[in-house]
Length: 161
Image (cartoon, rainbow, N blue to C red; front, side, top):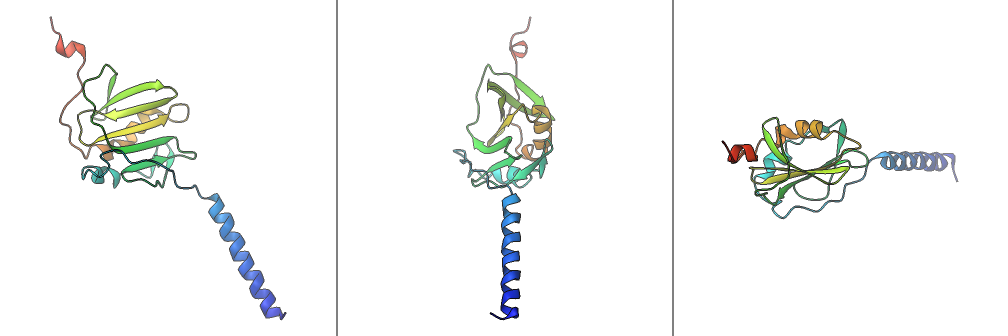
């Protein structure tokens, strides 16, 4: 083997080794399932405006239409095109002009679903890792692209003296 061949093999080996290390450091694709109405045209303006960082977590690539994920491991998951919620006894919170239904049945994982917006957007987050309020504030610029058609009400709005 000539010294030129040996040098070429060493260079190729070094490049392959560096490439392997670089790829090993990259976060993988987050596997997700699309929501039932993920192909709704109203999801496109939301998805294209998703921020690169949410609650200080870096955006990740997903494998499903109309989804988003942030964090390593993924601590925030977003689906556009989920079932539009109707009346509920779950609490509703307003963050930056967007009404969200809050479901804490699986604490520390919280599920927030937009109320009065079609298509509906759902965000699931791990409250041990990120703040729900910060997450929803960071996502407001994308979610507000679907205009509100209704607002949350509570019993004091319905029953007056």
